[in-house]
Length: 362
Image (cartoon, rainbow, N blue to C red; front, side, top):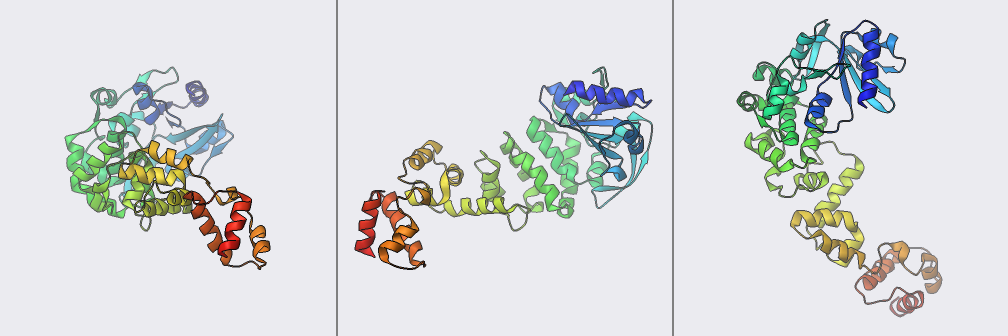
């Protein structure tokens, strides 16, 4: 990946422009963490980059950014710029292209995200980001209050970096979060969820949740049940406990999964019928939330006599022929009865045994 990044930098440099890898990739590189996407900052404008690279995506051109895909690696390339004014505590209203790396770095959020790397893999650290990286501290570039007011998403980004990296927040950031946390109310739920997903999915999720609670961000984020989270084994378990599918954006499969988990929280996750109806994953997540050993749930699931309707040794056609009836709701009733009898060991899953039972009962 780094070799391809060097090629991209070389191509920009060879056309007379400055270019550096910046931000998360360099930060993670210095920490020995694998990173997938690479951000590049350059003196070349989007139009000039389009002359260098054929497959440039100009969707974010108005913000001075383009996207380049090479060998399935995604490069976000942004022109050196100054951001003149922010609107909605989120987006720059106006940008100005510049030809100075130091000024470009001044607009960024945290010092640890300002470290650069050139085509020779030399580190360029104009704002002492490496020092803060070594000390394990999250600091804003410049005044913390100003930075968080410009873009209130930085409140959650600060907590996310603190969570994911195990770093402390500077005193300035802590005070600025307390001062500006109300601005989170104006952020889109989609952007908030993206950051919260990264916090909740991390191995240090408990630390992130503690930070959110320490600053009382649960109120601003409308996460009333944040104090109820004890288990952070999976992202879906956290969202299930929070149960905010009517507020935050989830796709249909996520909504269905969260709804099912919340239903099984009230049920016995070792009961054969519950295991059969909701499956291993849903019961495992619900069980983990309730502190039930996953091995017990897995063993109980594996020991089920049947795991789906397809495994029943009788078909709808056979039932209709046996009872000499047309299709109807009675089939659902019979199937549920048969499933229960087999699941609880009252009836063997054998065609002749099931037929005899149906003839006797129906």
